[in-house]
Image (cartoon, rainbow, N blue to C red; front, side, top):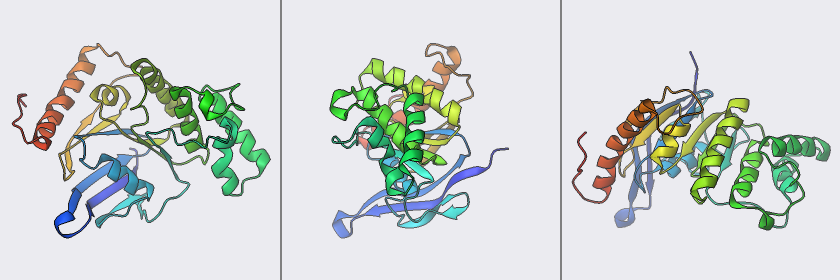
Amino acid sequence: MKKVKVQAIDLNKTFGSGNDRVVAISDFNLEVKENEFTVLVGPSGCGKSTFLYMVAGFEKPTSGKILLDGKPITKPGPDRGFVFQEFVLYPWRTVLSNVTFGLEIAGVSKKAARERAMRLIEMVGLNGFENAFPHTLSGGMKQRVGIARALAYDPEVLLMDEPFGSLDAQTRKVMQGELIRIWEKMKKTVIFVTHSVIEATYLADKIIVMTARPGRVKGVIDVDLPRPRDYTGKKYLKIREKVLGLLEEEVMKSLGKTPTRAQ
């Protein structure tokens, strides 16, 4: 039985105060198992990214706690890698030097940093582009650099905040397949945020459906399907429909409307 890698216990997060107070997450409880690919879906503003930022250590809970291997998360650390939605690359650095940047700051020797970066660049399918600058790369290629950079520390947990949201449909589909290939090779614990139920069902071992703000766990759906997954398969479509059923009610609530889908 896999051990619990990340655990949220009675988690609450509030922004602002007085009339400007916003409760983003309330009474949020979740367990993510080691090497598990967990995907969070929910209405806009439900706290998906806020939760990811707290796991990363960028934000602190208002109350409750988040544990990594049983220990409270209090700050960012190399045991967690983060891939942002936007292509957060240094435009004056090459692909190689973008990937080695964090390693250099951490005091890793130039030789060791370069060797590790080159292995990752090859793994994400950018071999031959190590000396290219970001402005010469496509969106998908830029995000491959972001993934390689996040993996450079060899983190135990990979956090991904809608990393393919700005890509065109075909590139997004290719990147989903590439991500699964990388994950199967490295077997990291992944927590992935998306608005796409199709993407969630294609990628996840487990899908967490969140309520409209304040964000809580509305449902947990195990996706027990072999990979690569068939978008048209009956079991895939059944799981996708179940996720949509849970999600639609919360989306309608967030819009102040009555759900139309039978639950």
